[in-house]
View 1 (tube, rainbow, N blue to C red):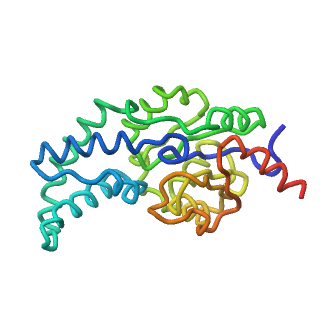
View 2: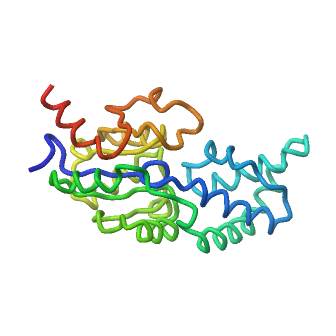
View 3: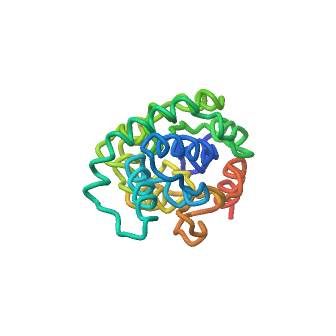
Length: 235
């Protein structure tokens, strides 16, 4: 039996299903060492993730180069990006999943969503070459009908295009497809696409409290999603 009013759910990856900050820190640390640059404080990375790898690398390089006390040269950063991406990809693929962990309640929540009759897709701004092995390593890949990375479409979240394309792949209407994420990126994309949205209260919302973000609901674990939605419908 379907959750009332829903046919499918689209689930974000980093900060929603898997805590990947350790992987980010390891890969970025290796990249910066290869570029002969200073390391970055791992606590700063949380504020930079969520908008795709290119944005992450630009943010990291901008911060590290800015530690000299001078304004970073944008043209210098752009010139460094190809080498930075190559080294980042090398290090990330080597350790993918080794320093990350699945959040409590994720497997139970995905099982409950499937049990409620919903089709599921994973939609992340992470490149597919990173996302697919991570889901396999954590035993989560079997829950999803589709997995789309940040390189699957012309634009990334918070643009609504990835959500609309994912709904097409699922064969569902946006209004009947729940977006589940951890940040304003997910919520903004969902609102623009016409999808209902629920946010987890942990994760990486760019250093801001997630309850400040406009959403239809908030959960402390994915296992709370089905009870929350059933309660809301009955209420």
